[in-house]
Length: 361
Ligand code: DP6
Image 1 (cartoon, rainbow, N blue to C red):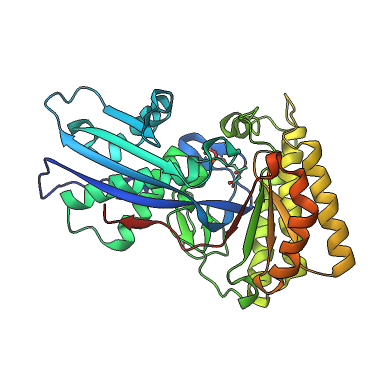
Image 2 (cartoon, rainbow, N blue to C red):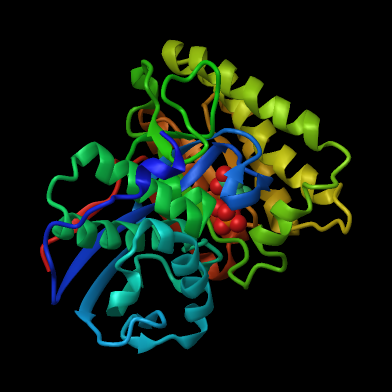
């Protein structure tokens, strides 16, 4: 597939007004996307678990307008008008316009809400952009009913990527690869694909408890962080390492090798933050409590032999990953020993999920 394949040359139907609603989850990267080229092309391939409970629901209402000069839309979060969301959506519309030629024909009302608090430090860009991309695809499907399910999902992922890179991994579940990798059949820089090989039962219903260490606004946006990979002294080695880690994961997923899984996942998280600390300008997004939690996890793993590990995204919050078979003991440990490090004791219990859903409203 190339970019051109996502441009449909004809719309068979005409549409006046209506609405679509999609609920789309967040995802947590195991091999991280950090660094990108022009047009949201990733510098290296990444793989993620799609989440289940952390999601955004977006209702997109559309009505035909006379004037086709500008984009026209309003955005609401939990019922309140959010004009500060508009620039990001305007940028998204500009990026996807050539693939969705109907965008200037309608006025849109975008009503969105998240299951997690907006100020939780959990980025809503993956779930939010994927939900919006899916709503737009529902409109395109009304305009051209010949669109297949495969094309629908691929194009939704393609569009979501143009909104926010990691969003392309939120359309489907449960394990999604984004970025060309020589051993992964069908993988593409343009959209996310379902991981195509065997995954051992050890990874079924894998748990992710998210400890909300710092709920403030991010000090450094992902976009700025990605940019700093351009002149980064370790960039090329890092990109090569991501390819190697993804290769190693193929065997780990097949064999259910949790020990090796943990090694790669934690190394990826710390490498991501290592890249931040060694960029120019350098920055640190972990907080003292992030390190307290990591050390507690390491001690508990040493003492018990249980397969608990952590990963991080571009912030201070800690995602604790563990197999369902060990959930009881690990959850007890989290609630008795780790919740004290969370801001206001807040954390979210999530698990691997199966992707976005259209809602009938
Ligand atoms: C650290 O997808 O938020 O979470 O493409 O600029 O919107 P943009 O970046 P974004 O970056 C996510 C970075 C990450 C790692 C990952 O999810 O792979």
